[in-house]
Length: 302
Image (cartoon, rainbow, N blue to C red; front, side, top):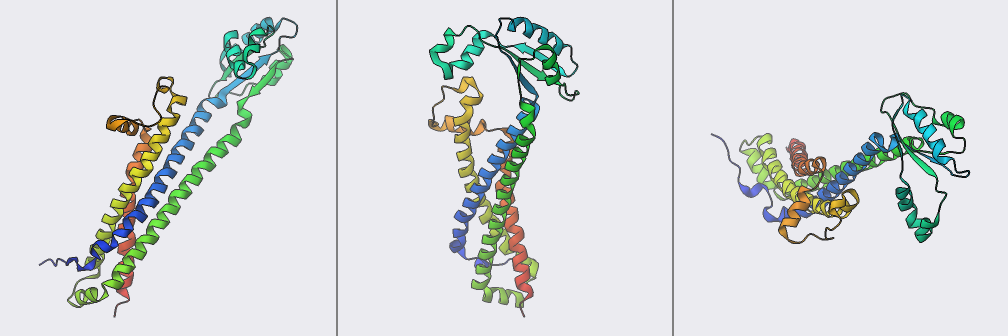
């Protein structure tokens, strides 16, 4: 006949103080995961987009910048390493200069010709400086790729820091769970000794306390993930107008339940999946740590 242990093995509501501590740790882990997802997205966007873009500026000192740009564009379009060559319209150049020059940009008549060049992904790198020395010696080359190595290293470093924060949050969860379990074992030592004397196996006692710790860990993990996820959702709403022109009219703070739900559903899918895993991982870690702690403690009993 299977033995059912009484509720005397845990501290009742006195161990509920573990929940806010784990919730705070889970919130930190959720924020760290948000930083990791942001750093990964920026790194991928850089590697797949910005690193392949080159800007060439041809000053119009003698009035022949347009002809030089046409010759240079024809040469670049015939190169196997170049995917696209575009000439920026004069109106777009004036719009770019407006924040710095204001109304003065409308009086400029000798604007440079700007070419936007896109390299082919995986193709041999084109020696743009050599081409410019031949076709357009006065051109100014702005190549994003020269910053690529540092920016990629920065992105990977930010991701590593985020994972380090998650790892430290895991250690903190393990630490507070161990303290809570030891408190339970000390407070219920007499009960455990009686059960042990009646033949209750170590695994049965350990599982009973471990399931209790897992429940507390799950409750704290859900609470912390909701708090951290809500913070990330609001931050995502604030930066959404910078990524999507249709979101410029959004209010700074969600109004009503429907807008709050839309804030959550608008989170990037990888981030949402990462946040959903936090309570499960916290509960699993709490169960494992509690089970191991009780097992080690029971081995020391006479």
